[in-house]
Length: 355
Ligand SMILES: [Zn+2]
Image (cartoon, rainbow, N blue to C red):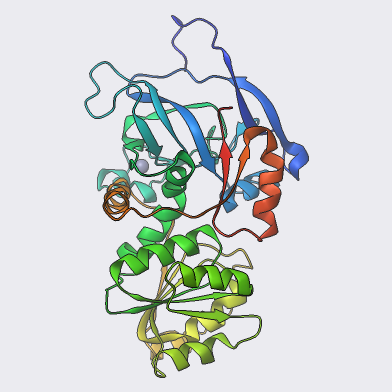
């Protein structure tokens, strides 16, 4: 709660949901500028990127405790405006990128460093005000120095998109440089991030899409083999490209529509990591295949602070740049949401927050 010594807060521009439905429930207008609490950082945001969950929050937000109106947006990048006087790692004016998960700090998961499993997790833009705004205030541990070679929009994309792909590939999927990974639905943010990060390790990467144009762009980003799932049989192509063996790892966030192909593309003992189910979350389990071929099915969401720190180091060292599909000013958030919902994008849809 704001300390009483502060005067009435000024306002800022933000995109916020006032109800659930289509774009008509997304208001672009004024909200109170947040007042920083001790231990928090007030960040003047420059850019955010949209994620599927923004559409989910707009449409229903079912199962996610939140109060309306609520500012949208999970990821973000900007500059530090205000910090504690004794803050050691962050300085006013510094460019920063945000981790969107605010854990309780007390549960068994937080205490063992697995904040991402926190029983009281609050995400920006899901359980509390988010980043489609000119300022946000959040705990200092969620604020990280931004890789110097990136634009604010590119940096913002790391906080959800690349962090999710990082945990899927490396923490859960245990990808090794000599292995082969199959990434479904290239063009989506997490899939593209998985392609970029997997290629940095030297692994062989196969990607699928129903869009020939997206496959060509993926090839330019380093995909070793591309499979057009509207004209080709994914499993047959995977087997042809892997000498009949199958892939070591599948990265998947499409769900029911590709689940069967994903399972059948795996080598014996292979791993499948899923972080989404946009096409449905109840595909047949195919249990016999799982136990006879000793497959591993792993769930994953986002990532922890230490994973984010490692990701930022790799991005800095390699010069990796997240793929930005398009950029919109905050005033055109409706058009940006339409672009994401269309599925036509290749990479992240970004929002500029200061004009
Ligand atoms: Zn916790």
